[in-house]
Length: 499
Image 1 (tube, rainbow, N blue to C red):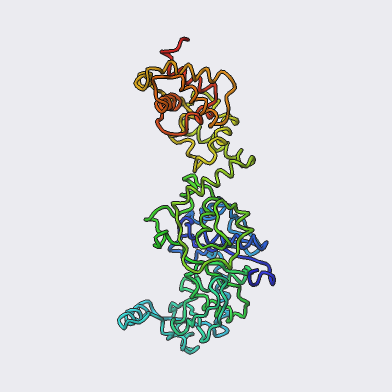
Image 2 (image 1 turned 180 degrees about the horizontal axis):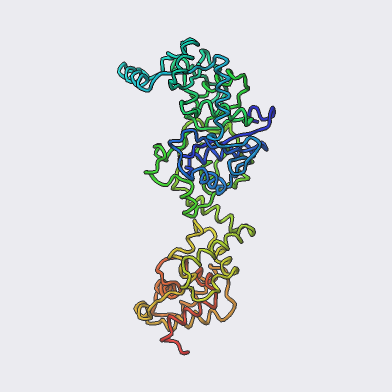
C-alpha cells in the first residue's frame, strides 16, 4: 500500500497549463493519477494552472477536459464539474494567493523585491561570464521596513520572494526513494508573487494542494528538484505536505523528446484518427511500467486493479507509437466480442458508411444492424481501426464494384463455367466457416480444366470486390452473403449467362 493511503482520504490532482491541446505526456500523468485515485477509492481532480496568462491558449481549457473524458478518465472535480474546492482555475484564485502571500510576509518568510528587470539581467550576464549558474543575490532580503515602506509609497513595482532556508528536509519519493536538494545553496530566493498580482507555480501549487486537501502529488520528474523548495513553503506555512511521486519523462522510442515535429503527440489527433482510448492507455502503461507484468489488451478496470506505483521505473520511459495499431487491433477485437459495446460500434460504422458513401449505396440494406454486426464479427481481429471498414479496401462491403466483363475474359475463357459453379454452390445452405467454404471452392476448381486455382480466385475477387488483394474469396462471400454474392457474379458474367 502506498504511504499515506490509510491515514487520510486519497485525493490526487492533474494540473496542466492550458497552453494547447492535451499531449501524450500529460495524458500519461493524468492516467497514473486516475489509476491511483480509483485504486484507493479516492478523488481525481482536474486543476488548470493558468497563472502565466501570456501562454494561455483560447479554448485549451475545454479541450483538455474533453480529452480526459474521451480517454475515459473523467475528473471528479474540475472547472466544468465544479466541486467543494472550486474554483479549479488558478486565474480565478488570485485573492487566495495574495492572502497567503501576506501571511508569509507577516511571518518574515517572504519579502518584497524591488530589483528592476535591468538589474536582474545584469546579474544573469555576469554569472554567465563567470561560467556560473545565474541566481538572484537576495539583495532585497536585507531591506529594512522603512526602506520597503518608502519604495511602496513611491509606487515602485515589486515582486514577492520566498526566503529560502538552509537545511531542507529529506523526503521519500514514491518512485525515487529518499531525496533532498539544498536549494538555498544553489538558487536565489524564488519569486512567489509577480508584480501583476499572479502567483508563480511554486506558491500556487502549494496553496492549492493544501486547500484542496491533496494527499498525493504524482507529477513529472522535472519537478523532483523543486520539491525541497515546496517543502520549505509547507514548513513556512505550518502545513502538512502531501506525499510526492515523480513520474519518469515520456520520450520517443529513440530517446528523443516528444515533439510535434516528430509526429502526432496530441490526444485529439489520436481520437480523430480512429484509435480507441483503451488502446492508447494500454500502450502508455508499457512506458514506465507500474505493473507486475507487461501484457497487451488490459482494460481500464484491469489497469486500476493491477496498478502498483512502487513498480514505476525511475528511468525515462520510451513510447513506441508504431505498436499502437496492434494495441488498437486487440482492443477493437475485445469490444467487438462484447455484445453491449458491439452495438455502439455498429452505430459508429453505420454513421461512417452513410458519411463516406452516401448516395453511392445501391440499397439501404447494407446499413441494417444485422449486416453491419456480421461484418464486425467476421472482420474481428483483422482490422486495426473501425474506420478501416470504410476505406477503399472494404468499399465492396457497401457498394458494388464495376468490373468490365472484358477484363474478366482476359483472365480466363472459363468465366461462364466458373460463374455457374459458384451460383450452384450458393443455391444450398452456405457455410459461415471460411475454411469450409474455401474447401468447397477448391472442389469447384477441380471441375475447371483450363484455369489455375490462383487465377480463378483472382477472377472471383475482382468480380466480388473490384480488388486484386484483400480478404480471401471465401471470406468475401460470407461477408456479402449468398444473395449479394449471386447478384455480383450474375452481373459480372451477364454476357455469358442466360437471363
